[in-house]
Image (cartoon, rainbow, N blue to C red):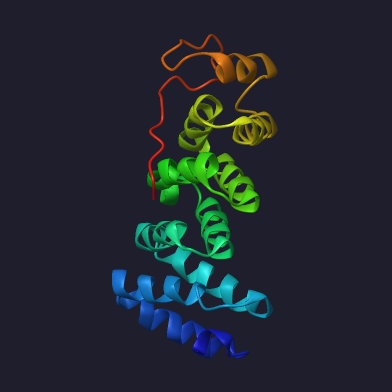
Length: 184
């Protein structure tokens, strides 16, 4: 309730209390994301900001929301994980990759791809795995993000899309390890 207050002192005080509760506070804030409608975008942004202050604890709470039955909640959770950056959210690239390959909702798949693109080398490795494991749309999204991020070349992306897992890469920019795409 306090996150919708127009006074920043009020919602920041509520946020501080919830951050002191650690995992329980992060879970409570992330759970609030399930209840918000489109008219409360500012509240969603505040919650995502506070979860980012919580570092790995907030990232875990957001990653748990990737399993929500609501596509809107999964999409916002993926976007927020991408905003957290590689130092905080890199442990969740497998779950984001799984969403990119397997989610039924096109918007969730797109946002998962974009989030992976924001997560540095770990995200690029997961996108590379999506090139081989995903369907045509997932491969297109992964290719697009890799090319936009500068972490792949047209030739490298094309080879990765058709090469079996374990095929060596010949460009230095292209990450070598494989990523495990796992359900969130």
